Image (cartoon, rainbow, N blue to C red):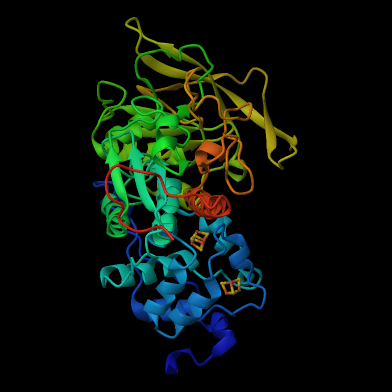
Length: 484
Ligand code: SF4
Ligand code: SF4
């Protein structure tokens, strides 16, 4: 089709990998806008043509959604971006979001066959390009199957809930999403900083769901003003996508000092301008120490820098190779001025006379043999104690699912010992008709995994309700459609 791309299977030998342009660190730390821009059309075509169209595409296996990567890359190489985007949407409910926040080096791109001989196809950048191309032209279809008279409630408007809602609405279900906060999007707007995913991108996606007929109700906490049993009398099935927001405790002396904060309230405050922890956390011209080495820690460092912190130091007990955070995010944090102290375990916090934190007592660590998961367990070096002076401590040690008070019917659902909901292969919990997915089941995990669970749950709900041949709920208002 194109004279440019006639070098067929060997394009990768002549064309090196190109990554999307990244704004200069100095410029991007002065605002919260996204740091990457789109590649141009010609570069996208050239990069897509580097794909050798493997018979057994490992990229696809590496993608939690099993995206049809070689197929849409072939379309993109031919310049048929709309067809590429349509293929991309066929397996993902928010490809423009996953392509922005997936750690591709561990997923699709990490699995790309070209890694052995060259550099992988920039799959994420191409996925973002083709979907932005379609979305900006307004050609993303939101047609649903005819209404089937069945109603499903979705609890939580994060990625799992949105994916489930989108799938069900498309299949003809009447879908209502309940969100406890006043703002929709869950983790996508609260947890993920705008420099990785702008709020307008999430809002555009939510608008597509509204066009599908999904109804959103904000400020409603299921388990409080509305019980699960209430929902089950009104709806044929319920999907719980509440996430995991209970911070893992900081188990060292001084954890209660002034100036010590959990990561999530800090991120929410700086990102969406509300202060869930009460008074705002001032970091301007302050030294900020972030405890932890995951993506939340990276987000805290980069957010603190954007808020004018004089210093943003990451204290992490393992080394770089064993750090769970994405390499790309680590690189960006470094460029923006974050400092990393690896093999550093915070063991105490010290304070001044008025109880404000002044330093983190640390001990140097060494790595031992790999454990069952292949990660090397750190152990302290005797006599290696040292202090890191600081004004603010942000704790990013991860999250667990929030427990429900006994007596609440949500608390009766079976959970693992760490609090994750137990689900079957169809994502159904121990309570019939109640499904779940995302962080509420897995503990903190990737957006793309939540999307996968939401899709799987939608299919599970569909099968469950079809098998039961459920009749639509009798309601007082006239029915919109006559059930078959
Ligand atoms: Fe890669 Fe994530 Fe897109 Fe899958 S969803 S193709 S893993 S960027
Ligand atoms: Fe193309 Fe890489 Fe996937 Fe192979 S593994 S089909 S080269 S993107």
